[in-house]
Length: 328
Length: 290
Image (cartoon, rainbow over all chains, first blue to last red; front, side):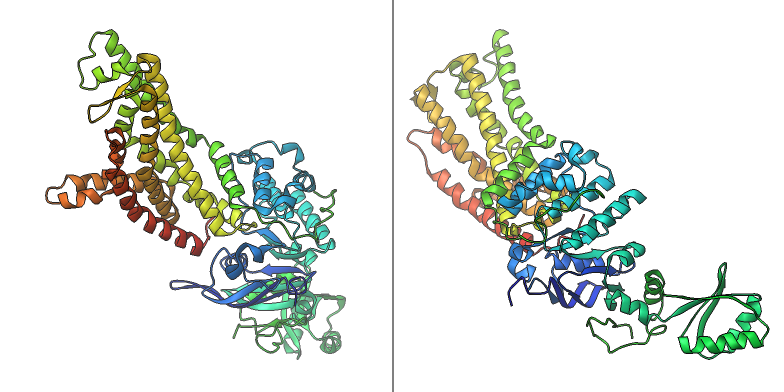
């Protein structure tokens, strides 16, 4: 298998232990060519540590990670060919201008990169400020410069750790559009983010980590399907409706809110529920299906035992249909 | 960013030509040149000989040239000034200047988070380490020769380009004296670059600029203290600080190479393990900061 055919990211059994603290606990990742792959998890879940191991910045306690079939720890910089990105905030030399910073990084990349400086500055719209010292840049400008620095390498795999953090709404929108555009250009993107709507909009596959372990990896659509069909019900008498719902088999987690009662159920049980409500004299004003949002699923996976709300496939799977793993 | 296209070549390419270590070294120098603190040490290297020359000139005009044992020799030849400055600065000031950059060169990048930036490019850690080491050594050497140049020019302008008396009492011509001044400073680089190696080790291991700079100077001071403790005289020839005067062998007639060769192997005993340890730490360290 040549490096162009190999998986952009393939991690197996990654463990990182800091004395008593287990930061990463046997993480497997499979990022396929062309993926826009969301890497999600609460703070301290081990996302950044995993990305650092992927880039060869820190050594795994156990396991290995390969980028296009190459291990950064064994092959050093060669393993990073075609790979770019940043972990945590992108960092630059504050006493140098943006252009000088890029010149330096281009010098560390090789001859081709230096010719792309103006082009990447234009991509992130920093050309007018390129001669200014990075020390005077806003957080958003540094994030954009981080993208520019990554693009210098003509990456086939872009690893971005919270690229929209600290950006204003317009900056976040622009960042989303840029990532989408880069993905459309054929760049595989591994995106670690707290911005769940952003991930839902951009990513086709995701891994969700919690306490150092992957609790889901696979297609986002499959995750949402596994999350169970959700419905929203508006009635003439919500209190009575809740009583009825409590007696109905297959109707789960009914919660009354400002916009009616949300609940989860299979379609086969919804018909029976509507009949039961009618028999109880509760008028149905609206009954609408709602797919679980990534945010709903994220919190259910990371704030409780993931086995509860989902039908659990075989442990450890990582095929394209997605699977919940490692939470027992 | 919304209205612009991604680079046309983005999804392809990726086979970048690997940069040479020399290219990385050049950038290390450019980074040094761009930092204000770089100039603090160099300013010290320039100011000290200037002050020395000015003060001696004032003393001379006040008719007090006989006050110190050096004063009469100084006024005989401008070439005595760089020799006296080296004697004076070699003990503390030049090691301090060298450690300012050596102790900072890795730790500062760690603190700023830029180490992760450069280690995710197309250069290996060994290249980055070598470039940083060379840059620290270059800075130390520049400080030595800058100080020597200022002292030489100041001395010659004040007291002329005349023959000079060596430590053994013989007299050498001005041109030979100039060559000896250069050789003495070059010889002094042996222990000074050893100090820089220790600075790089501390910079790599502690990840803290202040701790590394202070630690390097502290190590030098510790060796001076050890040298002064009664009963440890046997240790003295093997202390790094004793090698700071190795260059004096060149200013004797005939040239005494013994202290030079001695300092070479003694310094190697300090620099070798320090460099090896620094290299291993740099290669294997987790870059988790920033």
